[in-house]
Image (cartoon, rainbow over all chains, first blue to last red; front, side, top):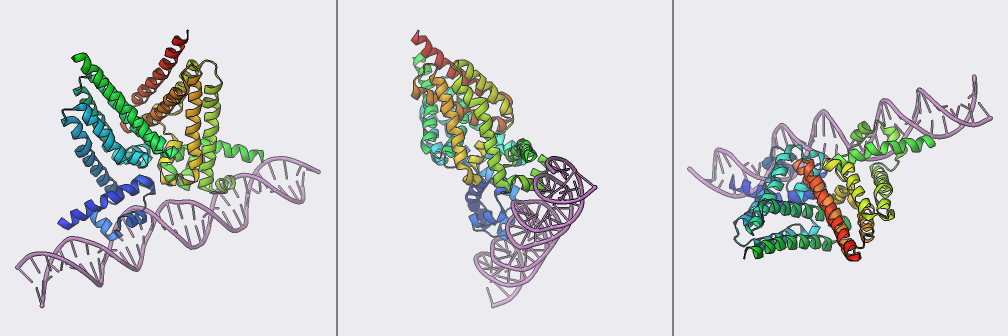
Length: 195
Length: 195
DNA sequence: CGGCCCTTGTACCGAACGGTACAAGGCAGT
DNA sequence: ACTGCCTTGTACCGTTCGGTACAAGGGCCG
């Protein structure tokens, strides 16, 4: 039983990579089997619900990771500027400077998103909300903070698209840096006005 | 012969919609057949190269449409502010306020993009270049114009992702309006400095 | 050491896949 | 009206699809 859970969790990263690269429709069981090193028997032992359950597990895993590594840090830190800089750095690493696709974003674009619309919406709402509260802690008014947060998340998603299309990591990092600066400037402006 | 070309062209919009919704992998021949109203016979008569040739034809059609409707207008207009506003309006219509996906962008995200990397790259390079020259005509320095153009295209792509994920047209339009204002402000700032 | 249960490779299922072959049909030119 | 060609529906190809069944392993506990 403990082994079961362990192996199932161990398979998630490879599983996620297949879904990222090939999408829900293009991720065939043979590809999944090859990527994870698990035969069909093990796959359906761990995920009786088939591909949809695998995708759901991957989405849950991603949500957990972002919650632990990004969202909570944004909300809990008492140094907003520092937290934002950390998020930008983590995002750059996670998405491999645009070389790695955002599974949640791409899934939302496809027609096979139907069973996962809730998870997809929550992922983005959570991200924007966490970032907005972080910015707001830097003395930035709530509505302006929300706007900045939304633009940043939009910019990250768009940067992934463009960086992939142009096959250029610098594009991704440039966009990331721009949004980082915009947020930090907003905080600095309101903080200086405070003092 | 003339009929052949006509029908082939007529099938492109429906074809594009299938690829948009289901991606390259998910666009099965049966779905394509249903969407276009063409049997396999006709399909392989018009596109002997199969799905890849269909996708190539769709990409060429999209490139032609953008060239005629958006890019050339950006470059040829002698009223940059007006041209930018027109582009924003056309983009909002074309992407149905985020309800419709950008086929070129999504194709670039998938692993099946390989035969089309050139077309994908050209599409975005062309878009950014055309928008940059338009902005530059508003007395904005070249490098700043390029930066603004890139950010706008990134914002559009990101807005599609987010609007789809949140299922909210207002998100898309809000982002679009922001970039429109940013570009127009830049032009106004440099123009006023000129006079 | 024996029994047990979880794990897993393999064979197999019907369906759908992308693609081909081709005969019947319709339309144009004479 | 005849001929020739383009168009197209349909049957069919081998392959792969997602998913199931199950028997052979393999480690753990008594």
